[in-house]
Image (cartoon, rainbow, N blue to C red; front, side, top):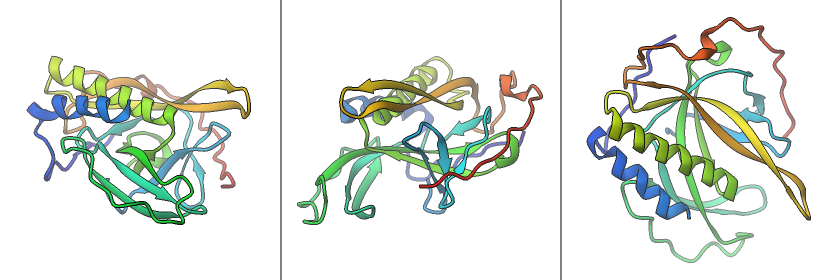
Length: 212
């Protein structure tokens, strides 16, 4: 497993990380070059323009300094405007949403992850979400990190598996929601006292590319 090193430029120190992450609780109620990670409507985690399915059982390190919040305005399948800031800053002020925006400004949260195992090891992705279930999943992870930092500042990096849950909507049927299952806590150098359970040998699943 390669070491995971995160950039902390212009972001809160480890000592202030807990307070910054807890600020995400109120607002909810990466880098530009990273691939986009999302959960599709069928409950599959996919990334990139080709909608490559995330390898089952893979472990991802979440950059604890990468949490952002802000607003996004969507048109017909395209981003019309977006304004995001680190969670240690107040939500940004925005002008009126572009008139083409279907739902006006939507509250969005996001974070960056890096794959630590399997055929996608080393891949950096960006996860941003506006759905209620997605925002709650990010919020929960942020609060878990805040609690971990308060307990052990030496290991603030969660290693997670990308899981899913679901509920039944009376109009839309089954709705899938993301789950970030923490399997280990790492230092900023990617090291831990124990290896994640995913280090046990597993049969590699067949990769699929899913339609958008």
